[in-house]
Amino acid sequence: MTDRDSLLRRLHELRSEHRDLDTVIARLSEQGGVDQLQLQRLKKRKLLLKDEISKLESRLIPDSIA
Image (cartoon, rainbow, N blue to C red; front, top):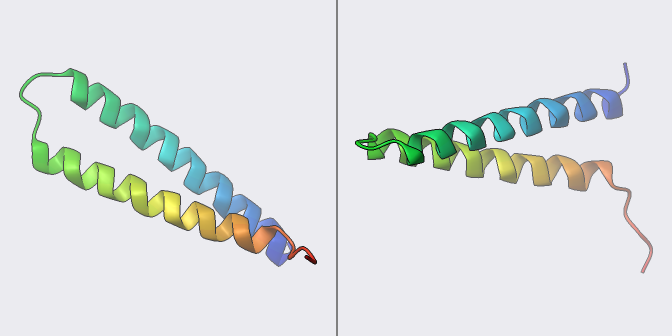
């Protein structure tokens, strides 16, 4: 397995977790009496995942000559 393959696999895992968190956050937000601290932690985790996804995507895209 190449480095690129492992990066793509990791990217897929992160995107999947990001989507799952999005679903969980949406469901919790719809409910009444939600633990705001838990919701805040989930949103923070989602943002961290988004940053990590962006970093991996930039590593996978070859530098363009401008």
